Each structure stands twice: as structure tokens, then as C-alpha cells.
Length: 248
Image (cartoon, rainbow, N blue to C red; front, side, top):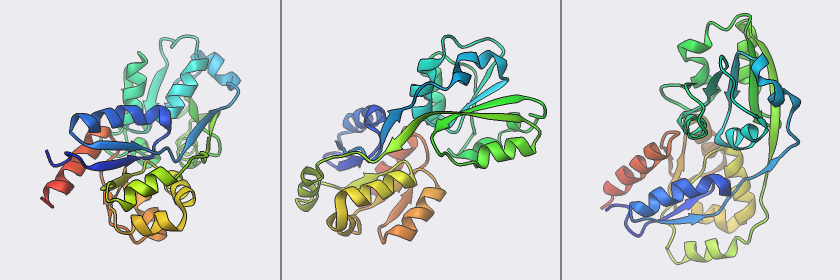
């Protein structure tokens, strides 16, 4: 019961925060949902209407699955799905897409590129379903391996407009025990949204991040205690439990 009554801030986009919040509640925690990223769908890219022409569709995030699949009339046979990490893989599987190529560990472009199935791609047509202005690492690497790569930018990420005062008041009362972020952009948005007081309070609060790249960015921006928890909800909760168990 190390999470009992622990206030855990969840900064994911609102449509993705509920499963984690529910899982935290089942462990006795008090999830505090404060989205630091808002997902704005873009007009459906034409490529999503003709996915049967591709050999592999790569989804870079759960948001790419949520928004991108709305424009897909039906998943065709012979097209392989790939996911950046376990959370994105779960979203695809929940939508009935299977099997899905995903890294055994990690949740970024580099992890997916290390998967054996992503090496023999010469001559294959690959569509990367992503947000606007996404990282070019994955596409560049697949092109270098001989793949024909296109992009389907189906959403943009925005900083939400939100009232930060209820969160800051809870934090001042000592009702916030940990903060979770899913990306560097989410952390940057959170710091803007909560201002100098949020930064000062975060200096005394552990920050849980999904992988080392986000940890490196957080170390540059903050003097908080930063904990790399892993990309999946189960890994995050397991690391939260371990962290607070050590302090009981």
C-alpha cells in the first residue's frame, strides 16, 4: 500500500490520462490529472485512405493511433503495424490491429530501429503516422536502410490553457507526492503553465519520466530528483511503488 493516499500528477493529454489515473486509483493513490499537452487533430492525410499500398505503418505514439485510425476505413491484410513502444502497441491491439512490431524495451525511435523486423526493409514502403514536426530520426534511418518512407502528420501538440491554481494549492498543502511526464515537450509546457512557483515546488518533488532522453532534458531544465520509470503504465506504477516503498 505504498501508494495509498499519494498524490500523483498525471500530465498526459486528457484522452490518454484516464487509463493511468484509473490504475493509480486501484493502487490507492490520488491521481491529479493536469494535462500539459493537448492533441489537436489535423485534416486526415490522404495517405491514410490508401494504407493498403504500404508494407509497414509505424505509429509513433498512442495519440497517433487514436487520431490516425479514425481515417483508416479498415486495416488491410498484408500491411504490418509497428509501434514505438508498449503503450502504442497496446492502443493498436485494443483497436484490433495485430500483430504489431514493437521494441522489447524502450519507447523511442532508436528502440524500434533496433527490433530485428525493422532491419530488412530495403525496397519496402513505410508510412510513419505521427504528430506535426515529429523527430526525423526514424524516417532517416529507415531510408538509409533502403526503405521508401512517407509521413502522415495527423495531429499537432499544443500547450493547453488551464487554471494552474488548484494544482499549486494542493502542492502547497503537501498533497502532491510525485509528478509524471511522458515527453520533453510535456515537461516544458508544464513549467510554462505553473511558472516560477511550479518550478520551485518541483525541485522538492520526484519527477518520473519514461526514458533516458526525457531524463536528460529534465536534468538540463531542473534540479529535481528524476526517476526513469520505463515507457509503460505497469512499469511506471511499479517504479512509483518501489520509490515510495524505499521511503516508508
